[in-house]
Image 1 (cartoon, protein in one colour):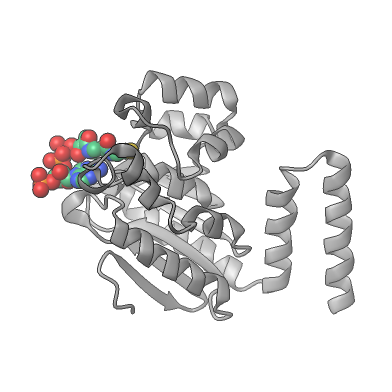
Image 2 (image 1 turned 180 degrees about the vertical axis):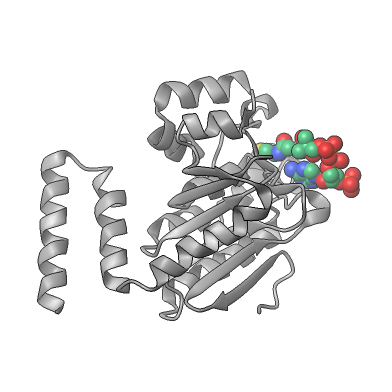
Length: 241
Ligand code: COA
């Protein structure tokens, strides 16, 4: 159990649990959460006891309703306020973690909320989930990786359409778009995420990390380079045995 204000971080049986914990503000991502998330991500990356992590939101209504509008879009200017977000490379750290990350999504998953989910490898959602990217309507663009991670998951044309129309996506469509791996009843969300996490935690952590690296890094490579990466990782793992 951790001492953070905006995040609850727990560890159990090889699984790290990260709960965004500002339910009174629908778990909106504020500066404090940025700093605490940065610390938690470092702990997940460096702690050998953590083999896999689950991200979820506290309360009944939201995983995360995006950036805290009272902080990030307030005076002195949206531009300066946004620079504040870039003081820590939370998103670079997120995407550099080679352990599997599972997002358990319910309720509102907006703006930075979607972007956190997209930094995870496997997304489970409950039937009440609603995704949205309100940024263009606020005169800004996604800046937590979303403009790059979303099209890699659902394709460029769909990502553009969703961003430019400002429309929200519900569970069925999110599943059809492959934005989420699975839609489950609300009460099944955490149990299913946990079952998956425990299964992963039981596997050899090096093999798990290499599988993630082969797939995630491979997606940014040509097939030829990807096959070379796979060969290097396969050779490296057999030489460890
Ligand atoms: N930043 C700060 N506070 C937020 C927030 C955000 N992104 N999203 C919700 N909240 C707060 C509300 O201000 C409200 O606080 P209050 O009870 O002290 O008044 C509380 O969370 C509940 O939200 P509320 O708006 O009353 O709930 P609702 O059911 O009427 O609407 C939403 C839910 C998600 C549609 C609405 O809160 C919303 O549009 N939020 C902003 C989403 C957004 O634009 N995010 C930024 C993306 S870049």
